Amino acid sequence: MTKKKIILSAGIVVAAASAAYGQGNGIGGITEATNMVTSYFDPGTKLIYAIGAVVGLIGGIKVYNKFSSGDPDTSKTAASWFGACIFLIVAATILRSFFL
Image (tube, rainbow, N blue to C red; front, side):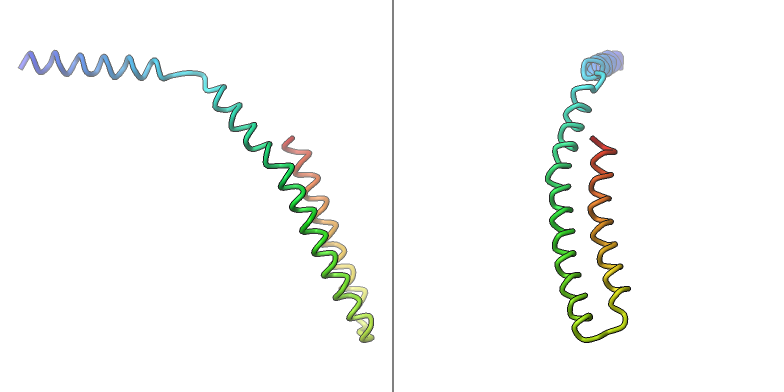
């Protein structure tokens, strides 16, 4: 029974010592994660700008079709599509300025 206690105690000491050596302040990991996340902002911002351009083109075509057909609701449609494009551009810019 005492031999089992000695082996168990030695195992606990080895496990505690290895856990103590594995401890660190983690600054290297946090810095690497921060660099990885910030590296995604430039492509993400460009993607949102491209989506805004496509939405603007689609909106322009829809507004032109409504205007050509004489629909009285053209100004409301134009304002909503224009607002959507402006929102995408402003959201991308603000997100980039908050996190970088």
